Image 1 (cartoon, rainbow, N blue to C red):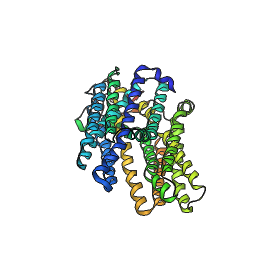
Image 2: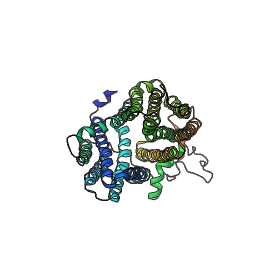
Image 3: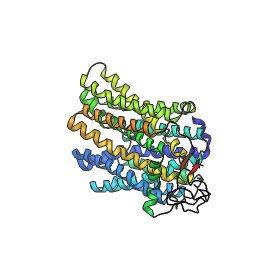
Image 4: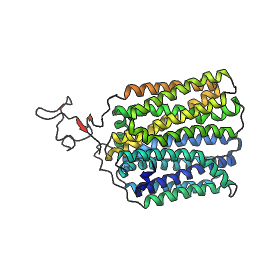
Length: 444
């Protein structure tokens, strides 16, 4: 898997991703401490609002930026967003009001919503070989999981040496290092996008493309499955471990670590697995595993604590992490297979936005249901969401899923060269003596 790092441009981009993730992890801890300084016992409400702002920025900003992305060189956009994030991080230690935290978080996360899909859409052009791209996806998944595991430990170690406010300096340093690494490489320019319509039509293009492609509609349903499993883990673990099982606070980290370990194990194995089986054969069973694990949780909670419950919880979280990674990691392959270079930024932005919309649904569902009706009801509700997503994915994703798909281009002018000079009639068919307007296209 590490062989892909021999590619100089990708190696620097991957390093940029790692240092930016490390900075983000430090910001998470530092923001919690800053919120406590300003709000005291109401810090959890502040952090909850900050996370909601993050999701809203992710859902709303990414498609808007994609409408403008073809006008700005990729490298300039990525560097500008890194510098924006660094500026916001440096300003956070100096805030004196809660609303200022919200404003800076909105700025920081809006920049992330512009950066991440653009970065993701760049990698397929940097690594045109699918085997290399698959390994890059696995490395990216591994980087996210390692950040979740080790950033809190890194923050704890730094707090023994420096004041909490300096953690934001570490965050800014990560973004500045990322900007320097991105600026040090030449990035391939995507093909020019041939789109008509106003800003709204361009912003919605990626979403329309995603919803028009069967495998990508299935991918969106699978994103809902991952969000259901992930919300159960991230929202309820502390209550399960501390209140239900009565275990020490350190075991919360162990339970979350089991979730991360399952994800990392699959990320490491995926390149070999995907060399042997297709994406559909891997991702759909993983979705059913997620729904099954969530469906078993209410029965386990009803049985009450026992000597088996702690190992069972670790095993359940391990399976949820593994299944989530098996769904998330190959997702970029489906996007790459479904569009040409010119449309990839819009498609990655649409997937980024809609996937976070799934989390915006499952986070409050898990939290509010657990608080008002109990953990068993929350697990049951999320299992229903996951099962619906899994069944929808099975039905939406055709068993025969060729790379080349017949499709229409209503957004292109009748004389555009891509459909081969075909003229469209009111019925949507070709005029006599011409080929159908449907085009079989394999993305470049």
